[in-house]
Length: 248
Image 1 (cartoon, rainbow, N blue to C red):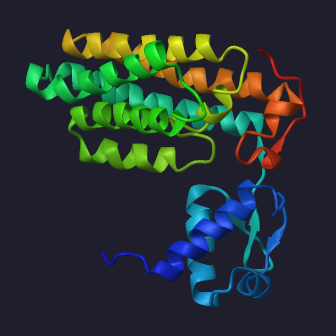
Image 2 (cartoon, rainbow, N blue to C red):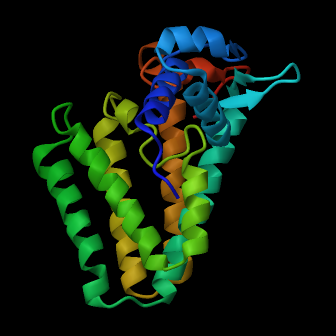
């Protein structure tokens, strides 16, 4: 498969940012001509970007032709997080059932130790936050790799592409919450318990913990959205409809 052209990548990144920043509103039609002028690229990269955003769930086709920006309910987001947690839970169970050797687990344990140092010694701050995001993403990916299933890896990649579903979707907001220290501590304890369950071959336990770990993202979102100051920190919050009171 050929690598995407720089123009295609640039158009996708710029258009995605316009949507997530709220400059393009939910339900707004994506006009090719207007976007060509706004983004400074030709129509072909714009069309390619729209089709990719449809796959990611940020845009949807409309009857008159073309695409419009998608909106999301709280239920949509909860479902996306649950799908990701279910699949990552399966990955953790398969990893445990494979009974990986100490060598196989070395990368996961090194990542866990690095997260421990960052959270409990340095503390997660705005200066080292990108480091936390990288380590958190690395941890989740290693668990997926330990499952040794290309089919499952592809399905998880599709799930993570759903809006608000990735493991790091709300950690930026999490760092700004008064409960931040507690939330990072709970998340890290989940990581530690998953590693132990995989090491001990406890597939059901590993699966359960990984699913609960994903649900922590749902709680983070609910805490963030009940506060107008932190709500604006949620990428794409303008796409979310708030029709009912959030239960926390």
